[in-house]
Amino acid sequence: MKLRTTVMPTASLFAVLLSCAATGAAHAADAAKGGDAQAARDKVSMCIGCHGIPGYKASFPELYHVPMIAGQNAKYIESALNAYKKGERSHPTMDAIAGTLSDQDIADLAAYYSNLK
Image (tube, rainbow, N blue to C red; front, top):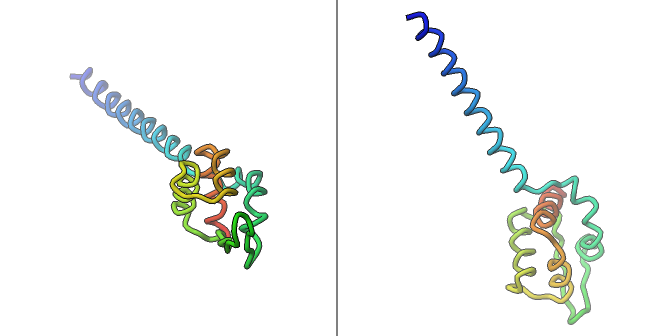
């Protein structure tokens, strides 16, 4: 009987530790998918020249009102950038910029701009 009382608590402890490890790994994977606003600070220079100027209008290829993206929903920004990258949306400047972005770049930029006011 003594063996059973030692094995059961040890097995229970092992099960708890295993579930914590699995949860931690899953959380780390989720964090890797998300954007990092701090990492985007080095990536915003290509955006701020147009999207950071209130009332800015681009004149290439035609007169186009450039939207402010500060405070925009992160999922929307990701969706728009991915659409430009895939050719589902088109603007020469955005096509060129989005085409150079990795999935992590897009997530980082979305996190950065969604946190601005």
